[in-house]
Amino acid sequence: MELTAIHTIVEQNAAALTAELSWLSLVIHTRLELHFEQETPYQSIDELRPPDIENEEGTYAAFVQKMNLNTAERLVLILGLVPHIKPETLDILLTKNKEYDRRYSEFGGVLLEGHLGLIPTAETAMFILAGDDLVKRLRYHYIFAENHVFATEQVMKSTVTKKVGPWLNSIWMVADEYIGALIHSTPYHPAYSPDFPAQLIITQLEWEDIVLSKNTAEHLQEIRDWIAQEHVLMHDLGLGKLLKPGYKSLFYGPPGTGKTMTAALLGKSTNKSVYKIDLSMVVSKYIGETEKNLAKVFDQAAKRDWILFFDEADSLFGKRTQMNSANDRYGNQEIGYLLQRIEDFPGVVILASNLKENIDEAFTRRFQSMVAFSMPEVEERYTLWEQSFSTKLPLDPTIDLWTIAEKYEVSGGVMINVVRKATLRAVTHQQKTISQKELETAIHQELQKEGIILN
Image (cartoon, rainbow, N blue to C red):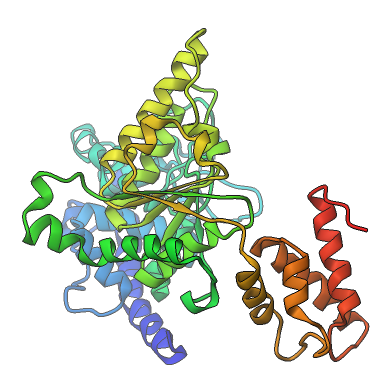
């Protein structure tokens, strides 16, 4: 996005947010006046109508309209933004109860190290909405439930501040990932964490930058064709009654042959985000946590049309174990849950494995394609070497690249490491080209890492 466009969006959002913050501030002061039975022109905060942003431009106004938020939901949304954009708005809630020499418990909120202001909790939001009116408090509980859009879309960071505590004691703050989306139109991407064990993967490469065998290229094109034509097949031609939704593919081959990079490139070329599932974080020792964490990933991916990529899938989708213990039975239940979610997923799922034989046949039967990523042949290695080095610091023109390609059977991943080593050494020594000795030294060092010793 151009800088001028970003500035325009920021200005539009600033106008909408300024009005929204003024409204919130008035509501908070009115709530306190009502709570302490002080003089106020209002009988209820319901009299304080929110600013009209229906015709406002900018990402904040668009978000409110897209989510179809009512007055109460808008109020707690802007409350959750306050710590990010105007923390002093909540300073009035730091007032102490002189009788007990402590803060008013009904105000909620927490103080965090390194931040001088009040961090609102769900209790803070509930107090602003309902005060001590129990009927209203019960009426507004739905906003903080797990099935509300704030939770399902992970708009709010609702971390409980203590392991054991009241439900409304959780922090009520807009999640970091949404700040950019609400303020200056940065695309939403959830943060990688134990609660969301998936990581966005991207690549700077284009299709013309990768070297693939004809068979592999054809299989990948089929996935791209499915993404482009799925609606035609499933809806226009009516095949949705017969075919399961989505597309499942297995990428298999030795490490360094480009499986992860190709998955990222598929997303880039089809304008879809690709999220890699960290299986080491997925498998939890706590029963039920695996399903819970994966459900968050699958639900988000389905809503936002992401591609899901399971790396080293044989560690979880490999040959099933004998059920000799309760742990084994639960492990197989986890696998069964994963398999069902993958089967029902309406988008593209890619599983990657070093060996096709490691994947249980119960899974392989469900793949629409199985794409082999083999070690590059001599011709492919030659092409890769040719296009890998910087034109500003190239290989010495006397190097016979064909001989290098014939002599060293290495993967694309190894080549990238060689390029890094050899180029770094040449830059350090202020050379204008990379010599054959430096190139081969770097190759030998990389092969030694894999246990291959060359004379």
